[in-house]
Each structure stands twice: as structure tokens, then as C-alpha cells.
Length: 134
Image (cartoon, rainbow, N blue to C red):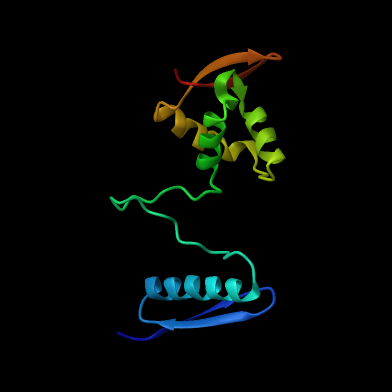
């Protein structure tokens, strides 16, 4: 197989990595970035997504799905909650996301039965209101 070469452009330096496939180059890049971050004394910027024993990938700890799960266990959804309220609670934790990016993870939580939702009229506007499933 032909050896391929990719250069990753960075703000302070570029990294060139060679390999025989995109997968091997990506793994080599992730390993290099983690080693570099450790050498600089900071937390690795690129971490492998953990897997369960069955090989299913878990959501990274910073994902919106994980944050929503934390909110559920903390009781945030024990009362009616709008997307705007979820957005504001995430912002307090330093996670700034547009409301449009929250609807998908919230809908997945509804499909999984973690949350339930109802369409309500608030201030003459129809909005989805989420609550923890009983």
C-alpha cells in the first residue's frame, strides 16, 4: 500500500504525519496531540471516546447528551423546562450552544424514555416543555 502524508495546520505549528490509511494517520495524530499536551503540562485535547465492554461508544463527558443526563440526575427536569432554560443552565456551566443544537439531544432523551415533552403555549408562543419521565 502507498504511504500517505497529511499535514495538519495549527495556530502555532504544523504537524505532518505519514501512514498507509486515513485511520492509521488519524490515530497517529491523536496519539501525537495527546503526547504533546502531556509534555506541555495540560490535559490532552483529543481523547479517545470510551467504549463499553460490548464495544458501544459512550458519549464524551462534554457532549450535550451527557450534560442533559447530568441535569436529569440533578433534578433539573423535575419541573417543566423549556429549551431556553436548558440553554441558560448550560451557559452557567460554560457551555455556550445555540438553541437549535439542543433540540436533537433533548428529542433523543424523549425517545429513550428519560424525558417526556408536551407542547405548551407560553407568552403566546407554542414551545416544547420537557420533564423527567416518571
